[in-house]
Image (cartoon, rainbow, N blue to C red; front, side):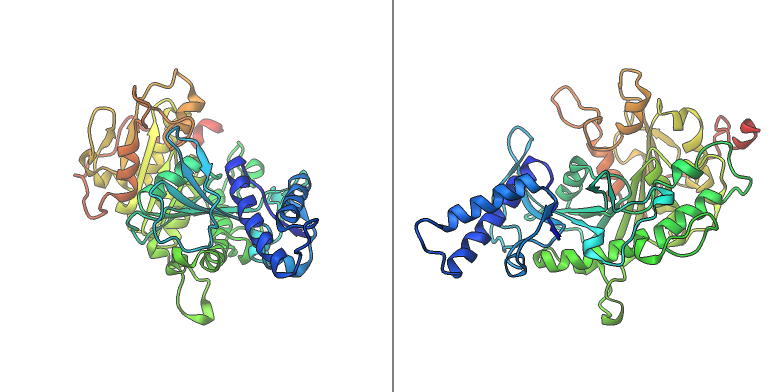
Length: 426
C-alpha cells in the first residue's frame, strides 16, 4: 500500500497539478494515444480516485516512481492579495529561475516514510496513526527569491502556516517533525514528582532519543534530533535547490547528523519548555521561547548550559496563566536571563527593547486567558493593528534575528516573582 498525504485545498490543488502533469507525460510515454484513452482522461480518472481514497492509494510501482514520494506532498503555494494561500500549479521539484516573490516551497512527509525505523509508543500517546489517520507528519517551508540567512528554525509545536510563512519571509528554512510530546498528559499533572528534574529528563529523552528517564523509553530514531536529521536528508533529495543539506554534516559515515550550531530552536508553551531543555544539553544558534518555559516545580532550568544563556529569548502575554502564575518569570530567572536586561513591555518600548531577552505584552485580547497564551506567535490568535497588520511583527523579527552579542544591562532578580511554587501543592 502506498500513501500520499493530502492537506488543505491549496495543497491538494498544487499536488493534483503535479500528479496530473506527471501522469500525462507518463501516459504518452506508454503509448496511450487512443482518442478513447487520452492522457488527460487517464490523469483525471486517477486523480478522482485519489480524491475518494485519500491517504490510501495502491498503484503500480512503475507509475508510483513518476509521482511524488509516498506519504509526502510537495507544493508551491503563493499568497494572493487577500492573504489566503492559493496554489500555483507549478511542479515544486522543478527549478524556478524567476521565483515569484510571494511563493513558498512547502513540504510534508510522514516520519514512517522518511525513516522506516520510526515506530509508535502508544503508552505515552506517541502514535504514527490515530483514528485511521496519519499523525506522524513533518512539515517544512522556504521562500525562493529572498536572501537566505543560512539558518534553520526547528519548531517544537504543531504546524502553523502563518508562523512558517513569517519565518520564510525572513529568509529562514523552517521545519517541524513529529516527536513524543503526548507523554505530558500522563506525567505532567499535579502533584509534582518528588524528583525535581523528572519532567526535564523526559523532555531530554524525547528530544534526543537517548536514555535520560526511567519513566519512558524512546529509541534514537524516534527522538526529535534524529527525525530532524532524517527529514533534512529527505528534503535535500526532494528540493536540491533549497540546500537543506547545508544543515547536515558532510561526513558520509554520519550524513544525517544535524549541524546544531546553525539551528534555532523555537516552540510555544510545552514546545518552548522542551526547546529550552534541549538547548541546555545541545549547543544551538539560539532559542526562541513563546509563552514558556513552564515546568514550574522543577529545577532543570538552572542547570549549566551548552548554549550560552544570552542566546535564549522569551516572549509572553501578561494575562497568560503561565505568566500570572509566575511560571515564566521563574524559568527566565533560573535560566539567568536577568543578566541581559530587564523585563520589557513591547507595547511601551520599541525595538531593540534595550537588548533584553525577556519581553512581555499587554495587548488587548478581550480578557481571554487562552488567547493571551497563543497570541504571542504568528497565527489566527495573534493581535493585529487597525490596518490588519500583525502588532508584534517587529517583536518576532527581534526574537529571531537580534544579534546575540548585543545584550542589555544586568538587573537584580524580580522580588515579585515567586520562585518556590512546589510548596503550594503540598
